[in-house]
Length: 482
Picture (cartoon, rainbow, N blue to C red):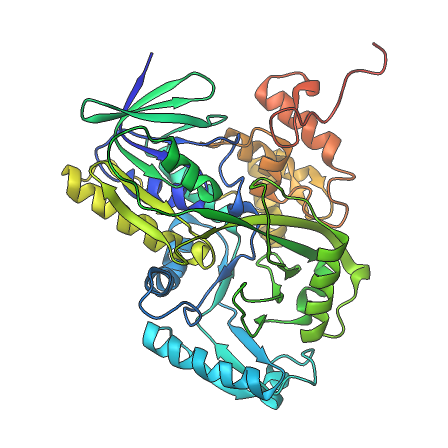
């Protein structure tokens, strides 16, 4: 049986979820097809979490336009959908006269782009603001409008809001081919399921060019290809979180913004990324060489950083387009692209979702729903509560009195909430992204068995069916006494 929708969005990352949330305000049947088993499983779960000010993107580009718009929207969006955001500012560091000249160019570009809060400051002023910065820094471009967020929590917030407003999410659904069927599109997934849509939006990240090639109609697609660019990161313990308050960049090159040092919204310190063009779009491996590059680059900015306090390493693959700019909007009647969304794509997500939603609304004459739920409340974090708030929470829900993750002080109440919500967690990593259970120093070493037990109970499955991240990533093989 084919499912009919007004709009099918291919890809459940932060871009697809932002768009689905915006469209859910209108009288339309909307579906999101995602090849993974959850939202935010691609680049949206493995990036720097930076809300860029807008000075780096080329003047007149879509990156520049949507960066400035998205940055301006972020604070209000974080309040509306209850995801973490902090305006901590950023600095691009110069270590020599040549880099200092580049700062001047970045400043002029930022002013033309409409970026706010820009100034060039001396090395001495840098160290007044950030005492741990290297003595070799001679100047910096400061941007007070830059910020930080949690990319996966942001994607989940958009996705939950969309789901609560009736958007249907189909996971483990990898698109195989797309054909014309009269005036509509017939989308066939690798699992054999079929979906019919009046409109298709391609938000497939590193696979967006493949989705275009999967279309068998006569219309001509925009010519672009996606190069997977892998970036390796190192996450430091919360003991290092106070080393810097602003996000620190190296002077940018053609490959990116270099190795950054940034606090996270949850108190850790994040280092990275590298930038390596690779062949396999799903290669999330980390390397000794990459780790060495990250530490060397981070120590150049902040010499006191030590590898002894690293708690985990990971990598993400960003979608670098052959156009060197975003591919946004209608390609032909019924087909819309949100492709090649590399950095500063996270910052741009609110504005990109809004812009393409408005285009679809105009094209199809959609009207606002009277029952639209605009706001979303997140999971109440025990670790962020005052003593009085904790006592009240435990009185209302005794599961708040059971600490499951000691590192991050995550309770059973938060874990069960993350599973029972619209778009609830279905594996260990899904719980981790929603609650931070397992994000701490031990990296699931102590809490994993208890988290798995709760997940099995809530999903009414055997504990041997619990996975780390879907597919065949089972946490256990069987019972010892069998």
